[in-house]
Length: 162
Image 1 (cartoon, helix red, strand yellow):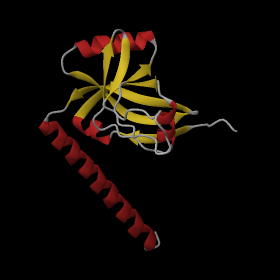
Image 2 (cartoon, one colour):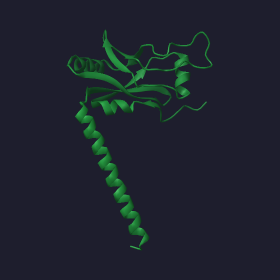
Image 3 (cartoon, one colour):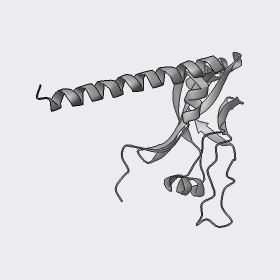
Image 4 (cartoon, helix red, strand yellow):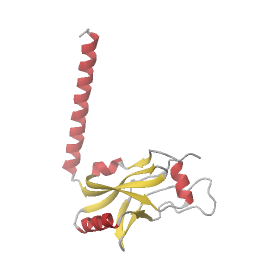
């Protein structure tokens, strides 16, 4: 069997980028059971309620939902169990010191396979206030309107033979 190459995204947490300012991102491996890997390969996972904590110099992913594998037997996993993240000691120390600061949380941003291995992208996040969210939405809509206007201008310019 050929070795898997590239990056295959399983789940993304779009709500995290809406609700938080992401200061820094890290890539971490996941300690998974066999049925969890099979459920992920089927493309099923949810990061919406997920977060990570540093306990005893280890990073643990909490609240991420990986549904039970449909073909699994009594060896199936619990869908919302805690999962250990595999990171370098230096990164764990950096994350630990940052989370001791008030207002900083660790949120999962995306879950993917990279060269056949399950990885999670986590971010050090600071909560946005309601007006920040409105500003983000307004900026996105303004950018979208500008792109739309530019596209229609370019489309009309070509049709007139310019």
